[in-house]
Image (cartoon, rainbow, N blue to C red; front, side, top):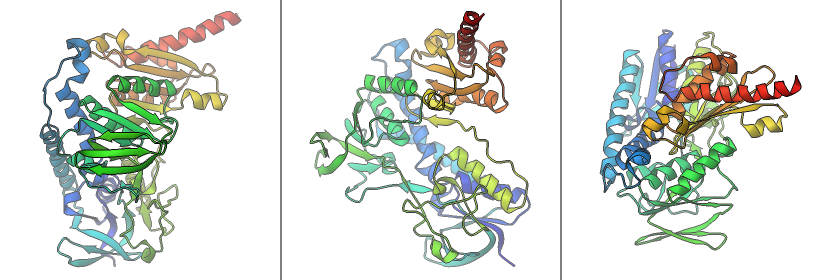
Length: 467
């Protein structure tokens, strides 16, 4: 007889949903995590604090209102780190309470400490005082998440040279900043600090950024960031970073030297598996600390599952939650549908980006014909009301069956707006549904109707020429 039916290591989005799903099915469930990390990396250093910081930046800088009130408009002239972190601490505190309450309400036992495998059914939990406790379980779910990857050649000091975790603990807003890496996290922080008035330089060894996104959308974002005095150095590699009393000097392999108050590395993520003693459970991780799983999220040991960022792509809080639920259902022999292949991607840059489905480039490479329908925020009453003249929504439509092949959005509310397209695509709807639907006025949702009319008008022109 084991202590629990399911033991979950890690209380982030994936672990939390796995634990609650199993508990709802009447199983005895326990979660292991450090007391100060309830809710996981997502809640303490990742998704929630970074998105809250973004809201604080937008509010205090008045950036989104400047088209209405002039470029000199500011809600607060001198923005301090205390101004920014007050909101973050409030939100994180509330969310930790929510997670704790949900776990206790579902009678999930919570063990404070770190877990490591003793064998494939036993986990040793070490608490803050060094006391160790052995827990046995029929099924184990690994949901330990990731930490920022740190190049060994760089001397991080958490003040001048930072990663995406320590950047949240800055002492002051830097006047200038170098961000190494133009991935999602790098671009999100680049746009936040640029909005705060920092002179930001982004260094990226690839020739472009966000290459999984629509090219036109990425170009629009680059234009807006350059407008905020962001400099891009594509095709460049950092040779060294020197720390000095008054800041840091970033030296590129091309010989360029970039002085700045601070440097932030955004060099990918590393799975938090090195302290788990995976070998004792018969498991291994790759060099990035990631664990391989099958379509049910089972590892090489069938009663041990892994979910969330620790299994790699797409490494999003939203997908991690679904993976956790799916793993728990499979372990409990409860029927579960596979996660839908259509998943929205959201990037919380300023302005934000969101999309679902395929891009123009992907469709072109696959030789799939498509028509484009575009709606621009500046032509919507809602866009004028909120002061967003730069946003846009783009629909990619199949001229053959009139179904949506992709939806790409840039601007205010993009990450919310995308779900209309997701619902239509997921239910197999056509562009005609959007043409005939009535949307509230004035809203950004109206952009679907405008873009749908644009696409159908273009398709009609082709049909007329053939008649």
